[in-house]
Length: 181
Image 1: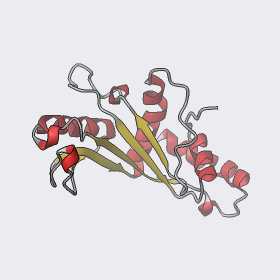
Image 2: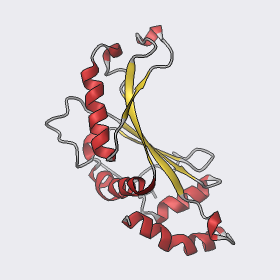
Image 3: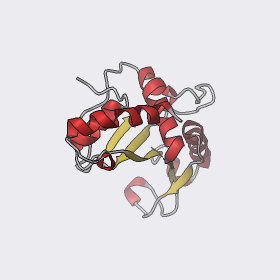
């Protein structure tokens, strides 16, 4: 078992008491983690697929699961974008890989972010999900900085079963997410 999953299982009674829940099945949990690397401006309108393939390979290394290339759904003349052009890559993690990624994110990647003071308290949507943006994907230890041609951003969405933002924040705090004070 992953250490984050053990921490979650150990913190169920404290979450129940602080949220005043009667059944342990009501305790919020993480459903999935979605990693997205959008490269619309970098990908040069679908002409240069080398950068897209590199981003897909790097996202596969970070997640430990094969990433898929996302394509444009509609044409947009202002961005010189045609329908079907590759514009990024994404991967959805569930189960054990999800817990391993969260452990890597909290313990390895976030402390390596330059001038890190904690993650934002305002990145929750109203449904209890959390969105985190990382400007430099090189904070993950799997990525070799000499092999990467461009610095790419990474969006991480953590989907939970929480009803509201307070429940979700309490859950993520118990799992070790370093929120700003």
